[in-house]
Length: 243
Image (cartoon, rainbow, N blue to C red):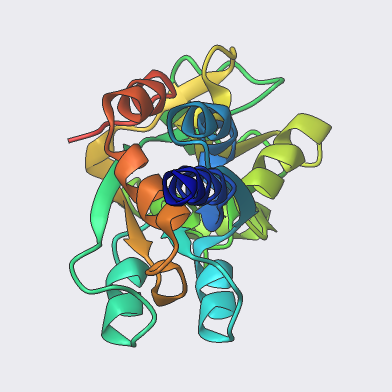
């Protein structure tokens, strides 16, 4: 009888410990609002906690290579998660696309009903983009500008944010009259022009389980949760496409 009681107590303690696990996730800045909305849903479904670090994809990947204790990486591109596996930081076979992003031109002061015409007219002093070297949405912005044949005209007017969150702040603070941001950041706002998808390479946002999280049940649970109907519903409602 004592053995049965001890066994039950041990099982209870193991269950409690499992539910007390936490996962550290590095998240591309464009996905900030969605990730924060997903956190309590993840907790409710799994009992696990999640802590986030937000930033530009390139900056986050540099931190990963330098030993940052992230266990899951949600990038804003499909390059660095695959690179993480190739370079020994990611778990083989764990890479998948969790969202496909849309690019938007946003302004709090200009009428962007025809964003292309506004860009071509050039009647603005500053336009914000995220750093194209580290932020895939910034790269998509430069591709859009080039596709419209406006690189020479617009380059002198560029204000560059460290990531897409700072880029949005530039526009909302008035430091730039308009800027290229993630469509998910400006859902429900006025002054938005969704950039035609044929003007830039698809923004496929991939996730990868990092080697540091391979043995953490909360990390593997978070990866599985991103593929769940619960998570997909939230991601799609934020303006992303999920295949």
